[in-house]
Amino acid sequence: MSMTVSTLGQDILQSTVKQAPSSTGNSVSQQIQNLKKQIGELTKELSSMGSKINEVTSEEEAKLLKQQMEMIQRQIESMYAKIAQLQKQEAEKNQMASGALPTVSDKSSSNVAGNNTKNIDVYV
Image (cartoon, rainbow, N blue to C red; front, side, top):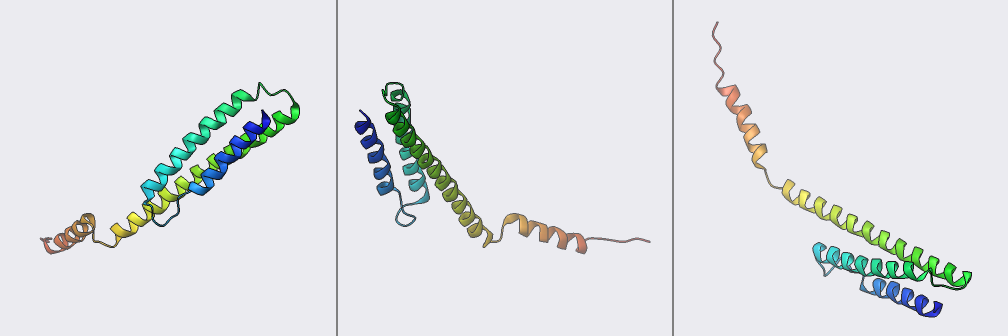
């Protein structure tokens, strides 16, 4: 039984590494969607392993299973970190793109300042 669980856990981790999207060729939203899908698959496997841990007969098998579960958990955490990084990069990219163009608020504030100085009448 431990070989089946061990092989299954390793297969999932290896397939996840192979499927990890590169920063080129995929849009950010596609990369995030792929990562979320992989997280879902790993979460299901983690849940399955958690229920199997009570069925394990030897301490060694239980220890192996726990190690695999921890490895999958770290992989999931890594994927969430990658999602956060991608979202941050996308936000910065969008901010830089919009910062290059004059915004409505910039124009109106300069016009307001200009109009205020031109339209001030002082009576003594």
